[in-house]
Amino acid sequence: MDFSLSTEHEVLRDSVRNFAEKEIKPVAQELDKKEEFSYETMQKMAELGLFGVFVSEKYGGQEMDYLSYIIATEEIARVDGSHAATVAAENSLGIGPIYYFGNEEQKQKYLPKLCSGDSLWGFGLTEPNAGSDAVNARTNAVLDGNEWVINGSKIFITNAATEITAGVTVLCRTGQRDDGKSELSCILVESGTPGFTAREMHDKMMWRASNTSELYFEDCRVPRDNLLGPRGQGFYQMMQTLDGGRLSIAAMGLGGAQGCYELALKYSKEREQFGRPIVRFQVNSFKLADMALEIEAARLLLYKACWLRDSDMPFSKEAAMAKLYCSEVMYRCANHAVQLHGGYGLMKEYDVERFYRDQKLLEIGEGTSEIQRIVIARHIGAL
Image (cartoon, rainbow, N blue to C red):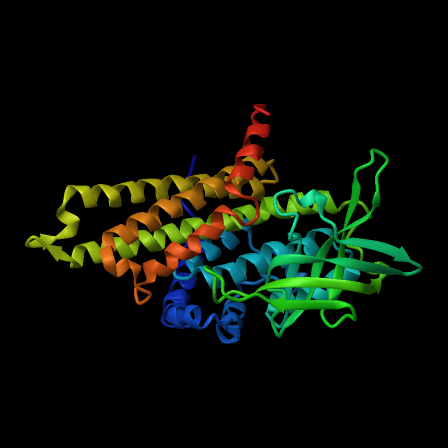
């Protein structure tokens, strides 16, 4: 067994970390305060090659392995969750479905601009009344001649309402199967299509500099050829997409936990009480020790899941485990970090306050912690 990273992975980590420290960290607080999506830093991330990391060079991607993508996401999350969310959602949910399930014409049409950062793409899955129970989505698409007519709505969709969003992949009910269950299919809907509206959501607790939107479809007509893959394969495509997406959410949890740990360690060495740095008090040093321990365990779990994926081996169980554990490790690390900062940890001028808020979505997005436990339980034969 070899636990060392390749030279390429180490160089990637260093370059992304340096970029995040130089370009994102100085503006993260202000963007969070203003609830502002930054096109400038997004374009700089694109120039660094953070979009289309695992996509073939044929379509404008970097053609690197999935672990490279996860390391890059981890390093961005170490500094700011909002920027990491933009990277994670664009790769896993925006680019991924088109790359893995699209036909050649769809790939050639959309992927080059998505990989270059000229455009963004959303993944319309969650609905107001269909979150964890995504298979009961009510957005429907009816075939009328050579067009799909879509009606319904989606909510909490990342990257779907920016000025450069080119479109969204929409999970729709397209009929009924022989067993009486809904037939689900994914359909590509371009921005600007009549009947399609994307509205940016505001007043979020977390990821305030990430673009989140509501989508509305009112007799929205798109060409029949906009179907992504075979009709009725939407559930399979959704599950495959979420497996990969869970690894990116896990990377955000791991990176965020690392960021919390480093901030807490630095502050506790500087802050003095009772005549000595607070890190010298056992009650505090044990918090830091627990953080270091859990981060190390989380990294091993996540990287193993990525190794399975890159080796074309089943990884669904490990993806759920990594997503669950890394997100909850960040919760504990953020909690300890704020506690070690005391009252200052509650102030927006300190980064741990933002990390504390940003963490919560990791236990909810792309499958709640409760859903992850169901997935794991099924894999081990407990359900």
